[in-house]
Image (cartoon, rainbow, N blue to C red; front, side):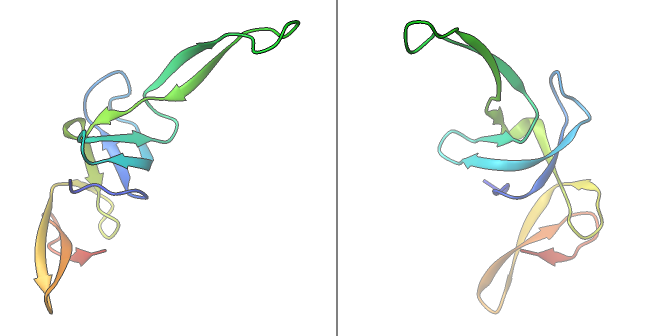
Length: 102
């Protein structure tokens, strides 16, 4: 998976199309990521003790990686990512500006 925790991404499909956010968690086995403040779903919580009220909270849900594009930290444009090796170290490379980062 080419997107990591801390990356900034642009959502290209779904209800939050066109919005950008920071990746707070990457789930590589499922090919999904969680983006801060986007793809929010409502969760209903039952009261835990007698006398308490139940509540509805909004939390970010996982989003498939194919629905987002990484924003290059150098050229600030949404782009595809490639890989290159520099001194036997694997680095990510922006397909638009051709610069390596990471």
